[in-house]
Length: 300
Image (tube, rainbow, N blue to C red):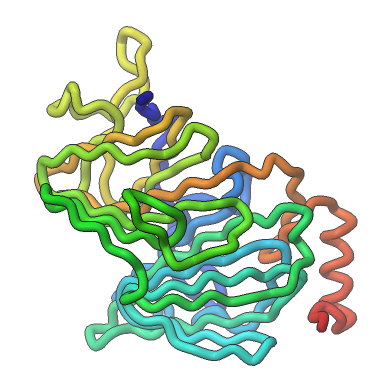
């Protein structure tokens, strides 16, 4: 087995989306080829209702899949196909926009005003850009949770891992989406097959990624003095992009660590991207926005 070294560590950045929702963006709306097939990851976490209640009113999507994972509070959603519902803590919605959909998401805080969730965008290959839209709404109780003897807990949202398969199916890039919790001082090895691009997003606690042979090392650089890959010690709202290999090693710090571990097969296709619409060529992109102006964006 070969350990995936850390390629880069970045901190999510504050931004504003929708009708004025304050959130943290881990990556997106730039050069995202290293994350292919993923395009964007937003962490919408807030305890001030004024910063999120305006929500994400009606907006279009085409050519991508949007994955919403709620940890606290709730998100009311609806779309142009007549789907309506509410996502609660632990619930997931995997929306395949395909050839086009109008969609809205309105976050609501819990009894303490807290709201926390993630939205991940996955690209669709050219062959499926214009497929029919569909929803996969999954309740928290339908997501497998694997509890190890050392206290490690893994929720398998999508893909197969440690003998369990997540409830989301039929997704183009064969992604694996895991919610991983590792207790204090524990080292875990997590397989991530070599062809996949992979990243981790830490949202609680802290820990070190790469090799547990130096468990007490605390380094922020990613190259050691001898030229070998270094150890990344990361905490809340840190995104870790991994290089090639077939497993990730994490050592949890004194408070433990919780992170999303996401991987997928790269599409390696050209990307023409503006806002919530992602196509392969500028001509396709211009056509999509022309259809929006003409009222022909939504197709039967």
